[in-house]
Length: 314
Image 1 (cartoon, rainbow, N blue to C red):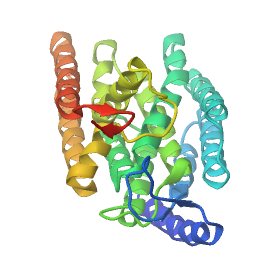
Image 2: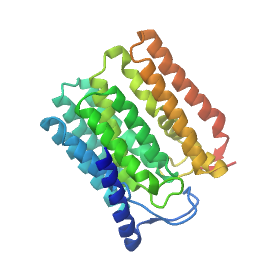
Image 3: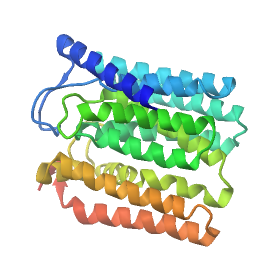
């Protein structure tokens, strides 16, 4: 684990210097949540750690899972350098999701799980890409979710979860409490993809009545990104364009990035503890715990969202 943290930290330093030379900078603006030009692409170490973790899996599973990660990492690196259209990114994310589906087929997953794998990759990749602009938020959430799923999993998949957690830990000092570099598309996309791998493999290895618990560690991120997206679609806004309408963005403007990252971490830790607490509970208790957590998350989003017009507070 310390090895992957060191690899991630070293990769961040190297990419940071490269990004300054190449002008790979996120500049402040009305659609951004930071105040100074900040290099991006620092999450390359996440990709390297993920590939190292994949190497520990059974060869057929490892090959397809690693291919999906290479596609996602390559897509992110290209987007960090030159920019990539939303349509191309979505197509490549779905292709990576297909790679994940083929990977879990090798492990004996069902057709439903394979279909969900294709869907999970673009959902989680975009969710983590959204939150990369808040100092420490993407890496801390990926770290906590990976640790929670790592406790749940066993064997080589647990090693992959720890590799992701370690890589996030190595990156965090450069991104929190003040971001000197962002993970960029290469890092945030890799986080989302690897979390999709852990989630789907954990689902495959989990008894049927308890699999909904696996969603709990990601509830904080998914509630904010998902409900905000639905809100923008319902109000006829250009939902595919960058914006600052997410709850964490609004809170960051009001309370600062550190407070937001810490608050979201507390929520994810609480949801993860709930997941592990109800792991061996009766089916009814499991579903009540999941529904209660999601209801609380949606309620907090509704109370905290206020009113906005195209991402600007009314």
